[in-house]
Length: 248
Ligand SMILES: [Zn+2]
Image 1 (cartoon, rainbow, N blue to C red):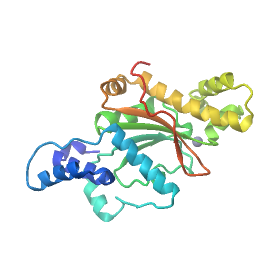
Image 2 (tube, rainbow, N blue to C red; image 1 turned 90 degrees about the vertical axis):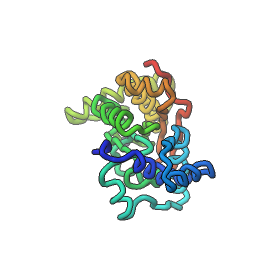
Image 3 (tube, rainbow, N blue to C red; image 1 turned 60 degrees about the horizontal axis):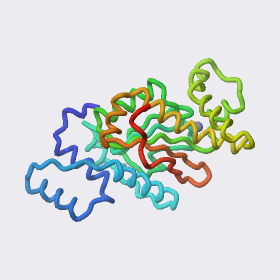
Image 4 (cartoon, rainbow, N blue to C red; image 1 turned 90 degrees about the horizontal axis):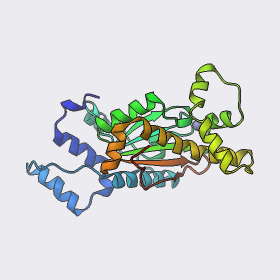
């Protein structure tokens, strides 16, 4: 994470490499200006452009048309001294939710925080703050998934270990919200609804616990988006593309 030792030009090259699908004729002019030695700073991708990268990557994943870009020896060498990921993703530890794979992303593309139930306690929030403040990722995605085991354990009030109980304290409010809003749902549908509420709860915890994230969202530099990954289809259902209000 020794990003500060890298030159801004290297930063721009890596970001552009990650965003190749979005490069327009205008962006190509920016690249050309770098080649001929002009030193005008190239703007980084916007939150909306980064979101499109993730959507396009997931579409390729679902269609079984992954490009497997940014995974070769050249990319390893390029990113050895610094990282400039274009998005931060808080997701579940579930082995069936491989974050980089399902977005067809490569080395140095995503800053990933994984924890069972994709909750946002102090440790996860601190990791996200690092990515937002030091790595300047303009997009944070909080992503749950269907049939989440951690959410299911809370819904079923399963017996768990002591440490999991700390984790479940973040999920229980989401379960109560889902149940109070939809008391007639059956077991599986209640879990699905709790997964959605749990994503929104994690976003709320992130916003509430981080003045830094709040200010970046308010300024428009950062977008925080909720999503749910479907284990059966491989697709991502985007819950909120309008960002999150700056106040908790
Ligand atoms: Zn899970």
